[in-house]
Amino acid sequence: MHKPASILLFCLFIFSTPVTAKEIEDVVIPDTLAFNNSDTTLVLNGAGIREKFFLDIYIGALYLQATTPDANAILSDTGPASVLMHILYGEVSKQKITDGWNDGLEANLSDAKLQAIRPKLKKFNSLFQTLRKGDVLRIDYIPETGTEVRINGEWRGAVEGNDFYRSLLKIWIGSHPVSKSLKQGMLGND
Image 1 (cartoon, helix red, strand yellow):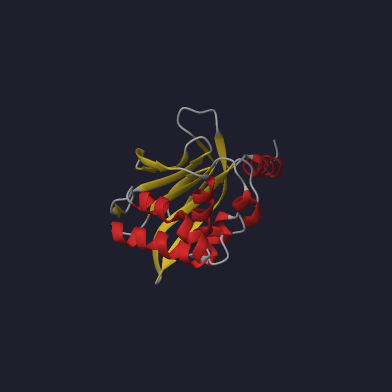
Image 2: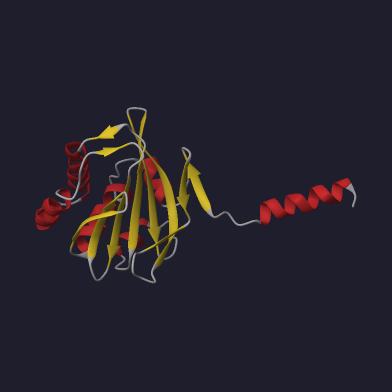
């Protein structure tokens, strides 16, 4: 086979091979995510890095039943979804984590909506512990169960209601996201 033909075939193979995962900061973000004890598999919608004061805090990845760049469609959905967070920063205290949830919800919800979910937020905040670099936080919405939290694969608890999960998603993809670049990444617009 001639050298140009070999190079052409090699290039066709490389560029036609499907990508099976995304890599950010040496962390492999899987292209699909399955729920435990379920046939439900979600696809990676997008991912990005949460930075604060030029420091990388975590990678946030959003998984849905079908990809879409439309934040409003995601926020009004009632189907399963998941957010996967890989901690990049040395240590994030439980207080900083819960303050982050509180601040993000206050920025994106009316006072009435925030008050309506406050008991669920209190329960959600109780599920957390200090996180360290390398820890993986998974926040799933399972329609029959609600919002499930796992840290490094360990089930921490659940909070009922789609309203709570969709409110949480506003922290990343709402009108006032924690980071505009992370929002674009999670919406697949990076």
